[in-house]
Image (cartoon, rainbow over all chains, first blue to last red; front, top):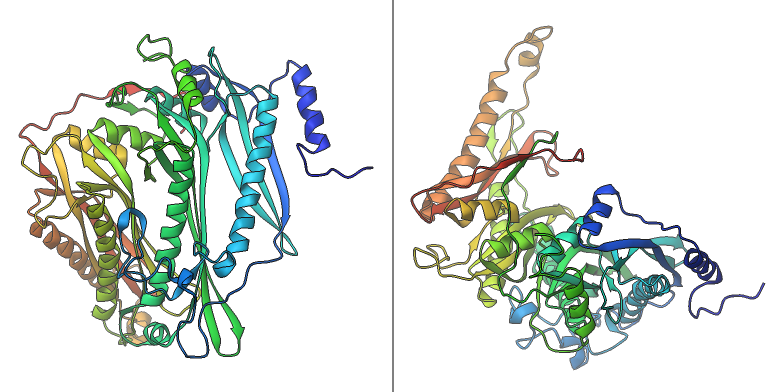
Length: 314
Length: 275
């Protein structure tokens, strides 16, 4: 059997698409309330769609934490891009006390510093999975994909599988968008957003990784008997989160969206020991959500909430 | 509103908007971690989201000796919980002030003890900064400290609060880390086989909760609030062992916007789902 070259869809996915195009059978991952909600805004489920990629993450980047044998910070200016008085977080906010420049992050100018290649590889994983899912959706003539679930599974030996799974819907409309919209909002949420005059555009992802050396001040603060903020760690997590949020906003901005609703904001911190007595901390922040645009003509949303008391069992 | 409402052609209008989109065109963007329900209701309540705001502090909680057989507040630990939350909240408020926000809604306060160090915890405050479409009836939406108001109410609760003629002033909290005495052998022995109240335990829990609640009340008085809504009284064991607990009271201080506080009587609905 000839191996698949990685272009387009894998043969089995293409075959399933072909089969469902010929058949009148429609599949969907939506539950009853979600399907009813989608139908209420004239979106008809046309099939479940999936995209997947297994990626080998063998190279994480180099450059270390920027700390050289007690002589202080010796990175090129790019490493201080987020740092110093000029550094800024989202909205021009200068961080807890302005970044000190002691944290090396993937958002710096040096593409290899602060796990840059790793971050690029994770982005590629998510985006390839989403693109393949979209390819299936286009194949079904869909206008959008709702309820998308993005998952990452570690397969061992630095291999990861990125999967995007959702339900393709087709609008009862004479107009078609240039590309199907993609959202991780559920069917009812999409329906409510549409009735409120907002339409989802795309799934938006922001990722950042940063590394920081455990310097003397950090170790002292983290092991004292008294209460104290550990400013080094605080800076590490604040900077990595700020960068992930910036990336998230930038991605929504590139899609020309007007709002981005965050559905997930994760953070992972771990310790590495590159050499004897040298300890660094690495933080990875991920922000995922849906970008939306407004289509109702008035500034005021055309919603009209009713006060209802559900007689449910809760 | 139905899809065939002439003023709003769903989904044709939505599809037209998507078809017109040009990636890369400049738009004003805001981010938020509100759910769709919350987002729409906050807009309907007359507030425009400005952006996600966040404050964080990684804090090393100090050490304090506990007397094995004594009920006592561990003030070093209480102070740590206060100080670290304050740092996170202040940073979040600073971000909101930069965005020009009148307030922050849907605030989540989280504490996560970190695996990578002893007694290290991250204190995190996340919310959505909002700006009011109209000026407040009493002049400003900001509180007496000139800070944007904060509220941990959900978007739904926020909508209802505004409808009922109240405005949030700020999140108020009270914390008390308390060590509950171990009982001596003699005391424990005398109770064997009996169903009795253990007065020293009861008293300790009373003391600790009262301290937490009165501190929260004091914060609300500072904000010149009329009341505190959605109070949660939590016992957080954190990582200090069975006898040391943080009693934590948190709520949203509110002030009236007008004199009558009526909302439309809710309609009763019978949902077609269990939840």
